[in-house]
Length: 212
Image 1: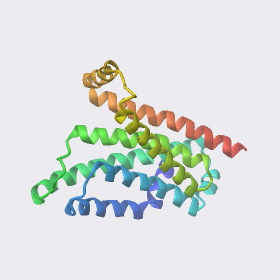
Image 2: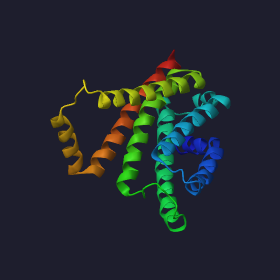
Image 3: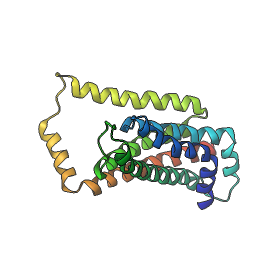
């Protein structure tokens, strides 16, 4: 498992260095935003599978004495480590930037905002990663990933903005009341639960494709 995660870091080192340099620059340019952070991770997913394809990593990992599901698990653990480190880094840069960049228009990041971004990224990872295991072409997988994510976002916007589609206030209040009970545990539990279900699906796809 450690070898697999180390391999992921080695293949994606250039993109990681790019992120380390880009995040402070985004604050200097007064452009930090939640959509920027999510888009950055979206690009990271594509980059990771692109290098897998370019370097024929699947051929290499198939020869290793690992069960196939552990290869997929290594990918999920890698993305989880990168996402956690990325958000911690963004939070730290945000704290430092508040002292030296008084022109920043974005709101300061607190722990709850970081947690919400983590949940959003976890949902995006849960939807996106299995797609890359379904399709051999990373370009096709990326396009379907973008279409699917934007379709979900568009659907949510339509539901919220359409006066003819009404969501019961009781349902909304019930969901918010549950989150208010223990927001940290609920959001983290929801994020990890989504990633686990996604991992089970992705590993099943990978093993079946390998057999076939």
